[in-house]
Amino acid sequence: MKAIILVGGEGTRLRPLTYEMPKQMLPLVGVPMIETVFTTLAQHGITDVVLSLGYLPDRFIEAYPHGEVAGVRISYAIEPELLDTAGAIRFAADFGNFDSTFLVMNGDVLTNLDITKLLAFHRDRDAEATIALHEVDDPSRFGVVPTTPEGRVIAFVEKPPRDNAPTNFINAGTYIFEPSVLDRIAPTGRVSVERVTFPALAADGTLFAMADDAYWLDTGTPEAFLRANVDLMAGRIGGHEATGVVDGSWRDTSAVVDTSARLVNAVVDRDCLIEADVVLERSVLLPGAVIERGSVIRSSIVGPRAVIGSFSTLGATCVVGANVRVASHSEFSGDVRLEA
Image (cartoon, rainbow, N blue to C red):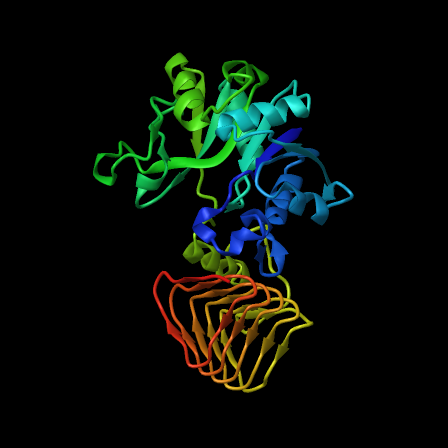
């Protein structure tokens, strides 16, 4: 079975980290996020994937020059212009010559969804398209999907006000499509699957949706990115186990960490340096980051090759971009973005 992974977005909510790296290539406990998606697909018999690329496509191609991850073959469909979600799906499917049932996944979602179960649900209902659903407390940031008891979609409501949402089950970003769906998408220009394609399918009664209690997280914000790392280290995501976690934290073997440093739910990637008396709590250091002596970093992300000067304090939720030098004795907290 073939699949499309949508990875064309610019990752604006994770800037400045995404100025030089697509968000799906940012590491979760040392492994690029996109590889967790491939692991899930491989577990359910997906053999071929088309990566739908738009933003910084060369970063993906350079990372996987042999065109394979977790035993899954990769090809690369680079959008000539911004096509939105449905347009990107059609472009990638045409590129890959899709002519049978296929899967679509958002590349920035961390999940252990049972794709085999979703496919069986889709076929049992003779659906044209099927959406995986996930229940959330606040559905206002997502597409909300009310259904009949057998799973037929009644409507597709994109980002309703919280108090007016007809259900708390939201579009979880994984779909099963029949090739006929592609005929509903204009061959050129921007088309949204959420605002155009799904409502049309729902109106025709051929769109279904399946709720699942799988782990699910949209990793597109700094807080969510931190949570994803912590959850992986804690073993909360079946099928995605981080290796090398010690006392709730992980460090690459090339990292240098002073013995007086205190790490709590922390990720220290390759070639990082942590000096004496540093406190690092629920934070992620990306490759080559340096934390000088006496600094305290809590619920923050420090980008590649950034340097946090001695006796500085970073609190929730700071994001430090690549190559940034934070002066000694600095203090930052809140939604702070520091860039070069």
